Length: 236
Image 1: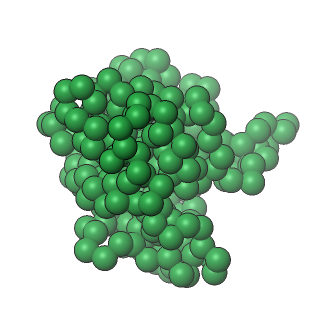
Image 2 (image 1 turned 45 degrees about the horizontal axis):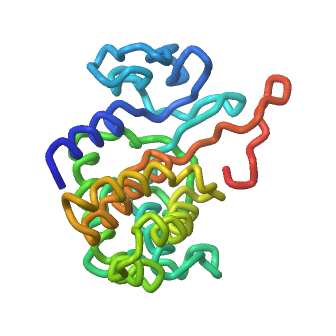
């Protein structure tokens, strides 16, 4: 993967934090707002992305939207669904692909299901690069997936055959239904890249983009406001 891709990923992930979100930014529950939206963060992150500085991953008030980083166990189980489909046994039957170096290693207390414990969920630069490296491995394996391989080896327009498998994989990675519009930019990027990097690599780049998306690496509890409380949807 080009170095620029790692840099972009690191900005996205290191610039993110775990905490509660409000209209004025992301809060840590004790220190107030870390960085308001649409403003450069003090740590040099991208506009609208809070700095990791002063962002303490403490348990926040249940009435505020929250953002949680996956740990290595959750990452592995989610990736497992790409190859095996959804769990039929409360995720206990899901194991990461053999030989995959799992990123986001976290010292867990308890099981590796989707806990809302936010302690030790910071994202360091090394974590971001590990996510990118894992995306190369996973995307390479997925090129042989029965839903993707025919598209990679085919001769028709890449955009016509890539959209459907990307929709299927995105729904598993993002842990919620997705629409065509949600993967349109991935398909467009692959189509644009095909002439320069070839059909196989273009398809892999689209899959890698899903695997480094914050919609996969983080889980949200945004909900819908009901008075002073939030009602989470079925996927949160």
